[in-house]
Image 1 (cartoon, helix red, strand yellow):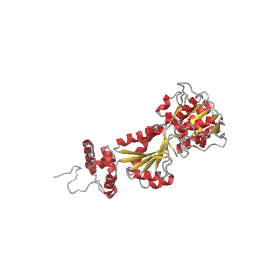
Image 2 (cartoon, rainbow, N blue to C red):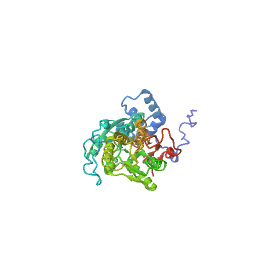
Image 3 (cartoon, rainbow, N blue to C red):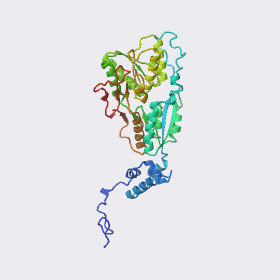
Image 4 (cartoon, one colour):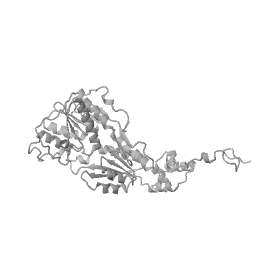
Amino acid sequence: MTVLADGREPGEPSQAAGPADDIAPPTIYDVARAAGVSIASVSRVLNGRRNPRPETRDRVQRAVAELGFVPDSAARALSVRLKEVVGVVVRRPLTAGPPAPAPAPWVPAGAWDMAGLLGYDAFADETESLQFHDMVNRGVERAAQRRGFDLLVRSVDITDHDAGRRVLALARKSDGLILHDRVLEPDQLDQLSRQVPIITLAGIARPTTANVGSDNETGMRALARHLLYDHGYTTLGYLGGYADSPDSQARLQTLAAEARGAGAVLFSGPQWQGNYYAAGAAVVTERLLASGLPLPRVIVCANDQSALGVMYVLRRSGVDVPGQVAVTGFDDIPMARHLHPQLTTVRQPIGELGETAFEVLYSMISGEQPAERDIALPTRLLCRESCGCQPGATLAGVTELSSVRHLRS
């Protein structure tokens, strides 16, 4: 008598059969998990594209056989549609210096003369080496390579009024987009995100997008309390990034709340806007010095590159940092620890921002809903010399105020 492998005789119904025990057929995602490869790799094997590596082909074919996977129309559509490309868009200024902000009413006539304010040879190539954006993009690239994807990187000028059309052109060549710092207006973002998955960096999560950023509030709160209570500074200036940047706005709001609670004076506004660039921050600092008004005791910069510009002008003008004016940054890009004095800053995991953005986007490309639509990675205060700390000094408890991953509610 013939007996089947599960102990049944031919023609005998399976014990597991029955409507109540129906099991959903395997999907292309199950094949990818079982084979330990990406959706892109499964797509390449199923469609015979790009000559996948023999070991990858074997693993996928073995998983297909073991799972009994039969591509349905949706799986075929996904595998054929997949371009294995992600688009990344950054904003860049037209020149090294920012658009000139409007003069404040209290500034004496002639103090805002543009002569000499933009001629900074030290920052002439700044727009070609944006360390923060480059580090984020390298994180995206690392994660993309692990999944078998390529990157298309495009920049749009901050004054470009046709950015939406340029981004749409990139979207047509990509499976999804990662947009830096308010590349699109909210209505443009809503419209485009219904056509292609989108992740924003330093943005605001929307119903059809996801956002990846850093915990600005906890990082800036730690820095503000260090300056206000450990050093006792009573006048502060906030040198901001782009006026419409959610990151810059969040950092300012937190700093303002802490200064208000401590009874300190905080200066900010259009005349303090450096647009995240060393050249822009240098222009702002030159103009503040030219006004003849006293500088605040500490200048809190929206990012490290701005702090570089501030420190450059102060040093050139004979202002001692931190003896006369303390300076701080945000990001902890590599050059921060090599400045003299070393820059006190808030570290955010720059490369991890890019990697996380890609992984969330990849899940959306694969047809999944992101588990979290607004992800804030941890930040950490690093007390160095530019705030007035002694070299090698540590403050117990301060640097660990944001030591765990945090989700904005």
